[in-house]
Amino acid sequence: MIHQYKNNGYSIVLDVNSGAVHSVDDLMYDVIEVLAGIHQDLPEGEAVPESSKSAVYEALGGRYERQELSEALEDVDELVAQGELFAQDVYHDYVIDFKKRQTVVKALCLHIAHDCNLACRYCFAEEGEYHGRRALMSFEVGKKALDFLIANSGMRHNLEVDFFGGEPLMNWEVVKQLVEYGRSQEAKYDKHFRFTLTTNGVLLNDEIMEFCNREMSNVVMSLDGRPEVNDRMRPFRNGKGSYEVIVPKFQKFAASREQKDYYVRGTFTHENLDFAEDALHFADLGFKHMSIEPVVAAPEEPYAIREEDLPYIMEQYDKLAAEYVKRAKEGRGFNFFHFMIDLSQGPCVAKRLSGCGSGTEYLAVTPWGDLYPCHQFVGKDEFLLGNVDTGVTNTKVRDEFKLCNVYAKDKCRDCFARFYCSGGCAANSYNFHGSITDAYDVGCAMQKKRIECAIMIKAALADEQ
Image (tube, rainbow, N blue to C red):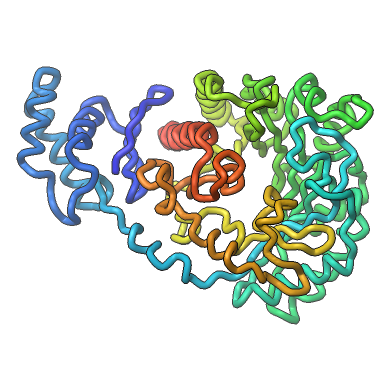
């Protein structure tokens, strides 16, 4: 399967099945385009058929010399022989028994606090309540959660635990106790915990920063961008904006972590579609690692992203990508999460096909110990998997999540982005279509654009090497 596009002056050809990316000239781009209209893949080891080459000569003979076309076709044959163009899909049969595959739990999202000291307008967690009641996780429940993770992680050595909310710093003493307990179990069970924390920053102080720098592998700091953008969507409960309170703390925190192992994470909405300015505002504040995610909201919400917003949003991604390249070449680059693409696609086939592992390898734990597929399903009774005392008892739902792969979704099966987004977010699919094996169309469009920009950036920066 071939995907072609032009971005920021680069002509890109992506061979979807092999993952090979080619930055080509106009001649090669046009030759491949004609061939892609005839073939989506070619049998391994076979050259382009003569009939297809004849079609290239006929279609492009008025624009290029025959010798040029012949040389380009020779290059195509070489790439086909190397498995880097018109490659066959070797993964389709892999998913036949996906439901039978053995999984282990490798990550937990601990809802350490179902409470928050901000009142973000777009909060899917209802200011931390998650369709339920305000609560703080006790040490006893958290301890059982870590024990559950150890017991269900099989031979896996590295385990991940994210302290999440609401606002986890509202239950800071329990966070510290659970980190201490987790560390005490590592040698005993041959495990290593990678702890992370997501915070709005209101309660950050020197003691917390010092502890996090010692124990947290990554920290996510929530901030939406420019002061007027952040304060409109992320106010305190009294309506006052939070920007002035949290930005100096985040700058100090990032500096104390030597500008690594953190992300400043924002959310953009219909009310700040010019989100590229917010990402660049982060960079101008001195932050090196950032992400700005599109809000996911019911269509009737005034801040919800609409289909008619997409053309402008695409322009924003292009603008951000161009500035990303420019600043990188000037030696003042930054990392934008969605542009950090792995063109080698990594060694894990299951992850490429099924994504984050929600419901199987990754679970969320409520303050009272209930288990859900991820934080976005918390409070939806039909997705309750069990609890830390009994383990996963709702195996039917768990097994349905095993089937969340790119070949189980009609919208993903023939999409060029399928091996990069791995089918998208199951929660978004459910919220918009009532099924975890559908896909959120607006989100898909943005994801495809981000992938195209990310690949272009790789090509642009490769020119500098």
